[in-house]
Image 1 (cartoon, helix red, strand yellow):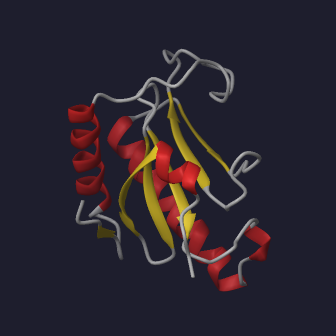
Image 2 (image 1 turned 120 degrees about the horizontal axis):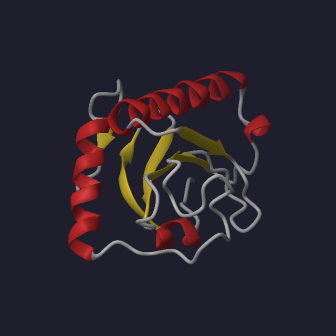
Length: 143
């Protein structure tokens, strides 16, 4: 049975589900940052997915990246599956701008996280759910 890792639960806000992946918003207000987590129990690596699930993950990742690009016009979209602290497979999608604090370096460890204020987190969640609703198969959470 799929369960979201406790660190991901603590550090993100649930947005909804695509056909394969749970979609999360990172709570760090410094960067537009979505995370895809395949809803497969005990999954650690992309190559552990069945071939059709690998293709679905790539389709969902590309759809989210395209959505971020169209909505935000970033200079770059960083996509990565690092998983050293959280072993559960999750794919980061971070819209980067030449004006962000960590540019051009990686965001990890560059600066302490700056959490959204509660109202702004709720508004960002609503904004992203509205954007994601344009994607085929997206089911927003009732949260």
